[in-house]
Image (cartoon, rainbow, N blue to C red; front, side, top):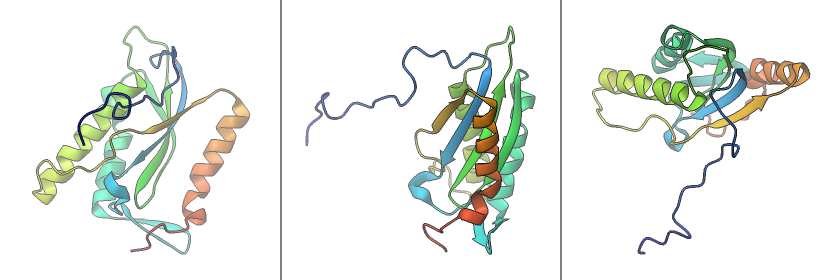
Length: 159
């Protein structure tokens, strides 16, 4: 099939005309490539994090070291994805949500591939899901969702 720009173009899932360098609270979900279970397993409602999952978790927690205007809130590793809340504060040093996520995915992919000696292997899906958190109640609900995610896991693929 030849390239057809009407069919084969990528559509952004980001809000049109929204500046993702704005100070704010963002909920993100980042999924493994082909939903592979790289980060561990859920057993009896508890996430058992693998070595790779621990590496990813440690790198996630280091995001504020690379982006001084970023704080992390609630976060959970799941077998094939992670959920986290990123808080971007006002700063003269602007960091977009996309830059933060891209940097995290790039650094973690290189580290995992170096450990596995599988250079160039995709770890992450190309995009990520984000939600702009607009109210305290929404923030509370998302924190609860993150905290309860392992207990609610249905095991898309339980291996």
